[in-house]
Every structure is written in C-alpha cells, then in structure tokens.
Length: 177
Ligand code: FES
Image (cartoon, rainbow, N blue to C red):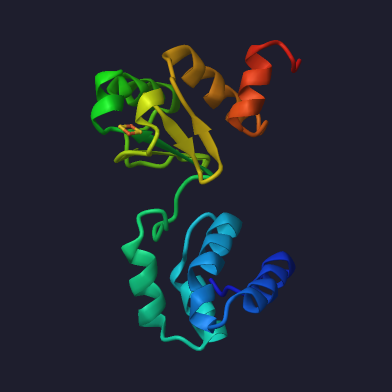
C-alpha cells in the first residue's frame, strides 16, 4: 500500500532536517517515527523515506534490517517483548511467556487474529537487576513481573487503556477506577 508521511510525521521530518548536518543522519530517527506511526516498516514506507532523503532504497533497508528494534514484518498493535536472557530466565521469563500465550491464544512469534497482540522472545533488555522484564512496543517497560501483573497488563491493553507502567501501577494502587 502506498505510503507517505502523515502531517505529524512530516512536521517531525522537517524538524529533524534542521537538527542534523547531513540528510542521511536523519534516517534512523525518521524510521523510528514511521514505525511508531504505522507499527512497522513496510517496504513502501522505506522506499518513501529513501526518496525523501535522497538515499537508495537498498541503503534504507540495510540500516533498518541491521537494528533489531526496527520491525520489518507487520506485527500486532501491541508487541509484547519478553526478555529470555539469563537473569530473566532464572526469574521465570518462561512462565511469563507461557502466561501470555495462554491469555492470548497464540505462541511466541505469532500475532493474534484480531491484530492486537504479538508475543516475542528477545535478548537482554538491559534491566537485568529488575528481572523478569517485558517491553510493550517502544514505550512501556514492565519490571519485576509476576503472572498476576501480566494478566492486568493484558487486560488494560485489551481495554485500550494504554499500558504505561506508571498507569498500570496507579491502577494496582487503586488510583484509577
Ligand atoms: S537479562 Fe533480562 S533484562 Fe537483562
């Protein structure tokens, strides 16, 4: 499907151009913006970005595919990334994944039929001292997880009530009805 920047992304793009001395330095930040807008980097969006920056599509794809934080496949609205590295593994990350799979009816690596959720097993999320941890999209980080909190997070996301850790904590503390 054809892609072009939304007005908001266009505004961000124009701003980024003023912040960097070279156009190609804008590539990574604008790819982040596109991904946050459409949920992944479609081939069309990468081609469009290449055109806007005067780069080859191959160069844009090369950069996008190098970094694991860029998603080149369509995912769910909420991508639940559970760390599987040692500290998290020793503190029950397998059980977190099993709980998510049970709640959502999909396996790790899959996307739910309603397009809402994807589950991913990932390597260290750089918060080993607060294991086990899970990241929702690029914007929400949950630490020292247990199965009860996993259930609450999924329930909130299903209700479209965000999922920011601070919000979840306020709900848990009784601060949100
Ligand atoms: S081992 Fe899980 S965050 Fe580092």
